[in-house]
Amino acid sequence: MKTLKYTFALLAITLFTVSCSDDDPVIVNEEEVITTMTVELVATGQTTVTLRTRDLDGDGPDAPIVSVSGPLAANTTYTGSIELLDETDLNDVDNITLEVEEEDEEHQFFFTSTVGTVAYADADANGNPVGLSFTLTTGAAGSGNFTVTLRHEPVKDAAGVSDGDITNAGGETDITETFPVTVQ
Image: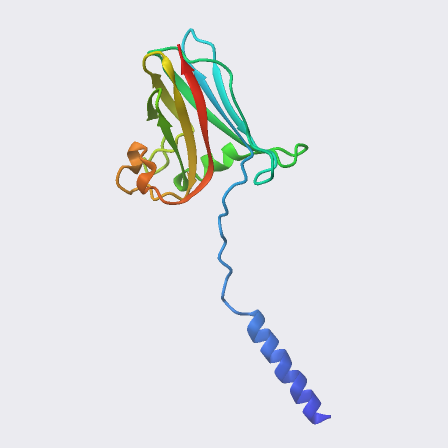
């Protein structure tokens, strides 16, 4: 009986010691689930042009639905804004834009355009670009592509990244889409 008491006492001490470990779990900031990205382009005196990609099944068999609401005007500066949504549960849509704003030091949009030039209009607390707001200045009439990529945890101090060069950005891509655009 005495041996049984010692065994239980040893077991209790072992469990107490293990449960009081100071190995706190590391909280991982996971990539966001983004099913829908909407890019609004607004210019004075022009119709707002909306670029949208929506992929409700993620990596499922259905391709994303990509739409462009109309042409852009030639030689015009557009103010751009981006909205991100998680619509995996249509009864409880999550606005991921707010999360990107709150974690702006861990996110950056990158733009590749064959129809004009892009400039960042917002920055994080360290003065590095984010890209939720930007300007797009179109060139001459024609057609081309406008690609928007959101990177999670890019290396914002890498060469060229502050200028929007994705080459050295690192990080993980949260969402990317290439929109076919016409400039008239």
